[in-house]
Amino acid sequence: MKLLKIIILFVMSQMLFLTAFGQENMKIKNCFDKYGKQKGSVMVQLSSDILSQGSKISFYKSLVLDETPEKLTTVLQAVHTDIEKGSKISELKKNGKVESGTYLVRDGKKTQAYEYILFKNKSKKITLVYLKGSFSPQQLDYELSKLKDLFIYVNNKRLKIQ
Image (tube, rainbow, N blue to C red; front, top):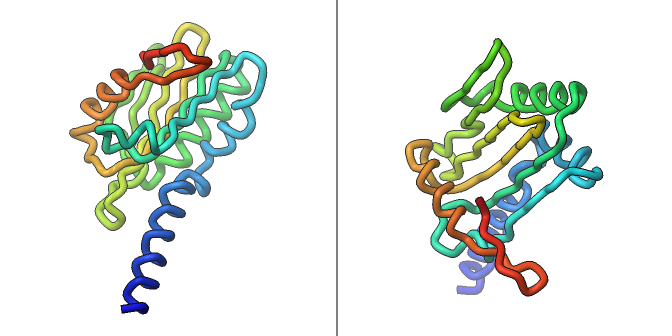
């Protein structure tokens, strides 16, 4: 019985570790680290407490930053490196340049956790989103729509994610 408890605790700690650090070996992590705290950038990471409220998303991190040629090149190179073994769900190009894209990084067949990168470059703003969860690409839009309904309390004010 004691051995069973130890095994269960070990498995649960490994699951927590893998969920919390799923992005560690990805190139986009460097973009979040490099640009996330720069002036004019907005980085949001939602805690598991917020995400657990009716969502299959287990990890969410987004970054919005002012567009410069250097930042755009860095972000696009990171995205393309990270999706080499994944697939494009959708991609919109305008004048030969990627304007937005939704990419599947890992398909979840082995780990039951799908990983996604969302990218948008519009109105001189770059948006990069990394998310992970137990849902297929067909359910991605539905899970993202549930995020819009979440409310976050900041300084005793209710903000709605849009």
